[in-house]
Length: 154
Image (cartoon, rainbow, N blue to C red; front, side, top):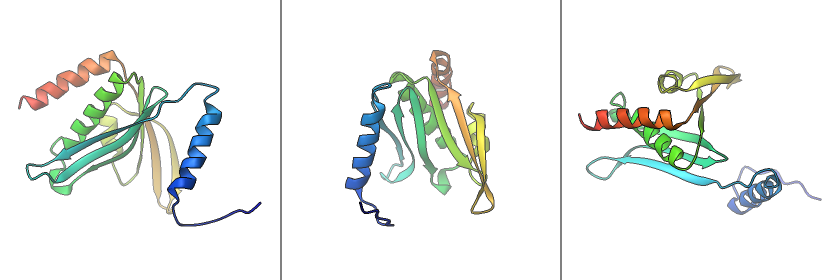
């Protein structure tokens, strides 16, 4: 047996590992992982923000959220999050989760109703990683829709 250590990505090898792990885990509950991408473009068609996530086992797994510097503090991040949550509820999700570093957006996620359930210190010997989650429900859906319509009517 040979063990290979590399800093070069191999999509084929990564997919083999992931596929086999999910095949093994499927005896518990079948998994249906679906990508969920929300992209914001300006009038010129340039991407000014976006959210990359996936839904599976009833959860919205938020992986990346970015808003261009010139579009920050204008509600775009909130709209991206609301849109993803609405879609996740439509896909049958009952929870959402995200992580963020101490130099990023902890307060932002907390203002959106996410609650911290863990943390891990000492990233780069100076940063803390925070883990947050939020229940998604029909009540959340109603609240999100009201917020969505109020903001889009402005």
